[in-house]
Image 1 (cartoon, one colour):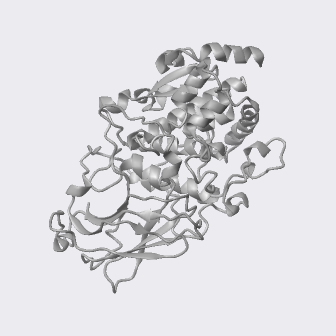
Image 2 (tube, helix red, strand yellow):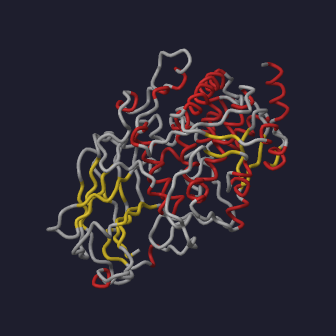
Image 3 (tube, helix red, strand yellow):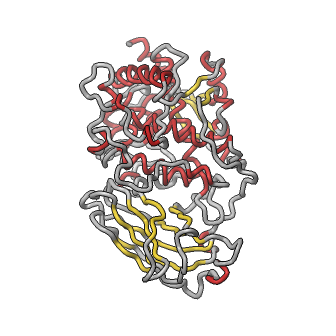
Length: 480
């Protein structure tokens, strides 16, 4: 290991463009296939993965291939700061310290200065590079990162390999900081009806928000992605941005999110084509501790990266890719409530909306009932919490005070704990325009007799964390 460490010291300085680096990887001459971890091929790669996690965990904290370094690329642990960890792990200046400075806490898009549009390509890079590290660590170019296909009812429990703390071969995949039912082998969506573990993100017609929809990137991030995090781990595990990447299931989760992006593209979904998105770069270490400059444009599609999946999700064919036309304040409003509303992590909170102010564009309620009219949407934004509430919140709407409440979806606060994001570098650049983040629910089939004073109720599914103090800042019903 000593010669490897010396080589890492030398290699850590100069930055290498991804295209140049990728051309020199022997394993890139073929095509890797990432498999459903419930299949025989996926199980074989899972065994390799467990072996690699054990090796990476034993490496020094300062080693860019090591488990802690890789975890910190997503975010430095929540009870420490990036500055303090840099000083502790690297007491003196070194190429590795600079590499850590450039790559730690750069997860997109879960912190100030980060941009939601980069959520998908950044995490594709993240999984890609640790996969390449494992290939070299095991001296096995055939290794590919399996994925956890939790959208299938039979696969909604945490895979058994991750629930065996005493196993010599698999114990390294276990983490105690998960929800009790998760490590007990119950489905992670237990008690949540209807299940939010679905492929509805494939219905989106644009990558970015458009016409009241979240768009594919934000839609899968806030809904399926955030739900799996919160339903799998607690506030010092998968349920927290700062701790999530310490759980080995994180990588199976994000392999699946990447597969969903690939599925959406195969169904006709269009990625952004503007220069700002394509040229954005991030820093990652390779298996030799070299600093690789990864550009979003190099990661927009699977085929050039020489990997694919054994199965892509079917979905509606997207005939026309919408351009970004979404401006929430400009859409016709039916009702709104624009002040912070504390949400009880232990019980329901009802929010009565009011007719829009005079300076807010108004929808015509009568026209909403006509054929072909744009469908109303419930938009909830500006979520905040002191600590992770560790539960989902059921979202119900009543068209009026006498109407029956109808469940339209669920909120999660995975991305909403401000203290977890303090160390995220400002990863924006000239031309970046962070979009407002929000949840959006189609309520066209849920509300009959809709008035300008509907009632929205948010109810925790289970017992939320005491002291979490969750808040929503804005609730609106708009004509999408």
